[in-house]
Length: 255
Image (cartoon, rainbow, N blue to C red; front, top):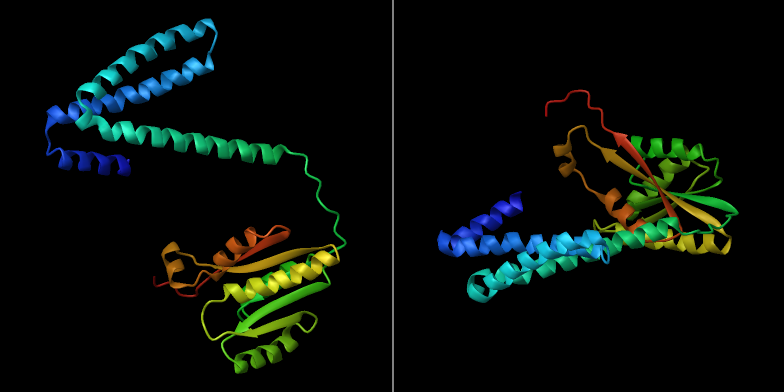
């Protein structure tokens, strides 16, 4: 509706509210979709008795369209150009859905893995991390890795010390990155672990802790590294993603 409103405003501005020029544009905008719809019915009922009525109607509407194009070309040319583009876009969308449907119905043989490797990116020992580890422990997986990127060597050293007390049975892999862009080093490490897992026929699962605020407007105040990481992981076949949301429960909500 918003797009149609904007288009209507533009037409009024361009044609300066001249109804004599807007009426042919409106007529073509009506009869071209009618002609396309009737063409679809003709194709649907091709070589049957039901094809006769839509075929006759299509001939009438197409005659009107041709007459308007020939007599009012300087006014109706935008419709003649944009309608085929829209039709082509619709056909491409239909082609996409057909490909997805075919892919979902194919008989795919999934590999039988020898085991599983669990990876959890962390930013510290917070409630998000604790919840993710509690859920991962339910998987009874012995191969677990935690990935941490610190801003300095001091941050990394401090995290190693704290992690040794908190989860000594889970290997911590650390990096130092002075900038705020964390996706590349995380993905590089995950793909290295994935390469080793492929040699052993192991499945890789990445648990992504994600902070969920009570109010949607508060989400803009936090970074979206979890979303970016999940989008990057979705492009990697053979890696599964476990989303671990943690809802913030403030003691005093003044917002």
